Each structure stands twice: as C-alpha cells, then as structure tokens.
Length: 340
Image 1: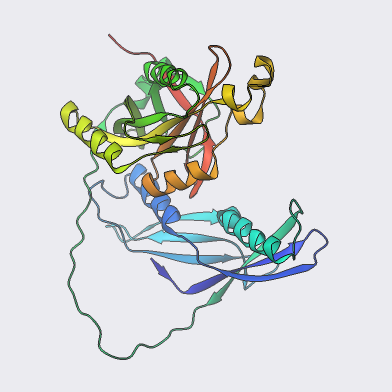
Image 2: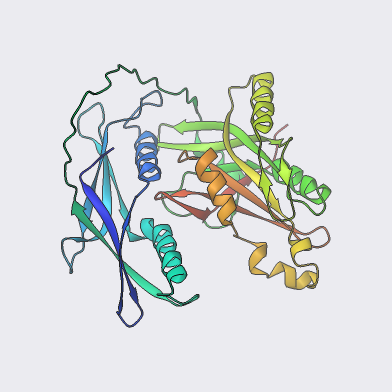
C-alpha cells in the first residue's frame, strides 16, 4: 500500500493539557481488506483478483486543518480504471490511542481510569536514500481461491430471524439454528473451560442487488486446543484437523470464522441466574485475547466470530462480531431453520 505520510497521536487531558505526541505505526491491512471486499460486493472486482494496488491518503480536519486529520481514504485500482474508495474515521486509531495511554500511565504522566482525548496528525514522510548493493528478485502474485456461488438473498431473508442489530453496510450473514444449538451443547459440556470451533460455509453473490452474503453451513468442533476458564488457544493440530474435515466434506466450503464460549455461569457463579442474564460479561463481550486471535487468523473482511454466552441453567445468549470499517465490532446475523 502506498502511503506518503507518517501518523502521530496528540494526547490531551480533559482540560486540554497536553500529554505529548506519539508517533505510531498504523496497520492499514484491515482498511485495505475492507475496501477490497466492499468493491467485490459491488461487483467492481472479481473474486479471483490478486491484491489490487492501493493507496492511503489523509482526510484533513475540517476546522483544524493540516496536519490534523478526521480520518483517511483508501483507494484501490480496478480493471475499468475508475477505482474504488472507502473512507475511515478517527476511531480507526482508537486502539493505538489506548496503547499510547498505557505508556503514559507507566511513566506516571496519566492516572489509571483518567479520561483523555486525542487528535490524529499526518506529516509527509521523508524519503531516505539507500546506498550499497540491493538484492534483486522476481515474484509472481497468485490470487487466492475464493469460491463464490450464486443465490437470491430475497428468497432467504423472509424465512430468517434477525438476531442483534444489522448495521447498514454489514455483509448479510445467515446461520442455521442447528449450529447455534450445537455450539450451546458443546459449551455446556465443556464445564469450567472455554471451548469453540470453526464456522464453515460459503459466500454467495446476488447479482440483482448486487451483494455478496455469507451462509454458514456447519461448525467443526475445535480439537487439540489449550483451554482454561478464561481463554481458548488453537494449536497447529487444530488447523490440520479442520482442513482435513473440509477436504472430507468436499462441498467447496471455506472457513467463514470461528466460535467460542464464555462460561459466564462459572465467571459469575456467586451471582444469581437473573443477575447473570443482565451482566455486562454475558453479551457483546469480546476480549483483547479474542481480538488478537481474530486479527491474526481471520483477517478477511467477511470473517466473523460467534460467542456463546453460557449462563446458569440451560440459558445461553449469542453474540456475533465482525469487521466493520476495519474495526472489530458487534454485529447482527440471521438465523435460519434447517430444510428437509
């Protein structure tokens, strides 16, 4: 990705007292992936396209002006030369701001739980010349195989039930009720440890909309994991097992995401069943560990994560997370009953 700017964060206390400036290394990949998938959903690029040439440009703040930015724009090239773009707001830098505040807390410049504000600034990068011999090599980019079928979304949505809130721009996602029931049963069976699995299925294109949506077809329970009361780690054997299962099914399915349980009944066992139902840990909770795993293993814009909030008795709720504007956010999904 072409980027001609170095980005920095200016941190302030609530009273506008400056806490200093921190240069940051920005991971642009989620933004580029989001822009590319958005172009794919609109039919601007084919599924077999290699990673398109892309660039990122700052969007200057409307009142403060340069060097302060309100966000940035990612532009990718398309075959028809018109290109495709997507704009991202200041929130894209929120995790970097949290990391910067942690450093300030360690230095004693900021107190724990103290509120702060931040501005984002962009400065032209200096071009440093290189001297000496350079290693020359030739590479060829191979487009990944991303099978996309054809289906009519309007034929499926009327028979589905929306769970959570569907945000405008989110890829429609359909999950069989059977998959939720299986995940819930496995969560109960895991007892005092987290458990999980892989969500497999297909991407479908509705050319009439145009739109690309995801259909989960099954979940593959994760084996060979390392689990505790508060964490779940997939190992190399886990992925070998999942790939073998996909090959045996021979249904041209892909890994759409993953699921794991939060044993709220154990985390909050000293609370009543009614208290567990309204606990903040019981719904829409995606930990830093969960986010790190998702960013590493499921970076594609269509990748999703289901959390089974396993509560006291037979009660459980389901939370879905996915990429939106390059950030991992809570999202809605549709449940469908099995046919036949």
